[in-house]
Length: 367
Image (cartoon, rainbow, N blue to C red; front, side, top):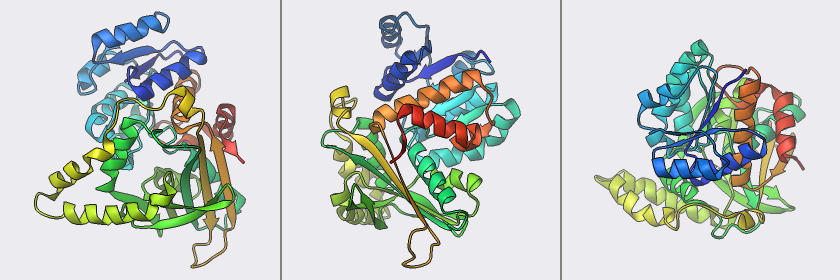
């Protein structure tokens, strides 16, 4: 396989991390974006890379830059606004696709719109292939295996160890702000249901102490049933700011109530705009080095007050660095070896052994 890697959004924060990871692996991606001067300058200072002027809103332009077997890597979000044309171009051409979305609604739409076409053209489509939500897929799979098929419910909590003050990117803040007004998907009795984000708060043991986390969406509810069909209930939680979990739950309830009023959605956007403020970009290397990703998966029978059957903790590099490394690995792997086509999760695409080995190589694994 001799596909090229086209990195769309290379001049952005996450795109820059993916580019750095690709270059460390010896890859020579084509960097792409809509700002011709910025893309050309990035290509020059990155060792004279090929570059292309591409607009995510122009599917015809995207298709002109893609060939079957190429790998389109995109970090251009929010994906609900900017991602659909990009995904369609890859599926139509038969190019592979890797994105950094944390928007599970977008992942669901991707499957509904492009899974069949991708299977026809041989396109492997890997959405949310970063900190959102690869560690949870790894931890959840290992917990289900450790439970020996007896587990029916799986709770997954996302945490970060180390100082998070001023440690989130503008993109993360925007996604979290938007998420307060959107429902979160969870799997209940083998079916996807939607509940108000942060309507549930659960405590996990992390580093020997109890930390709270609130309900969020996660692609685990979409992809884990493919590899662990015995699981009837899957719920994902975010515990980055554990002490604020219950206040965030109250804020979510208030946001939901306001949104239901006439003109409420616009009012909600204005009131929550400060949550996504701050400078562009994200934490620098020194700040990222002080933070570690930590994800826990607890498997149980699902009965009230049931004891855990298995509990798996995985830890790895900081969330942003981890995203860059995971996306770079997936892109390079897709240029070299065949994988299962369609809109798929990492285990479906590559198999558990290859997936675990890749994660271990990046520094993500059980602790």
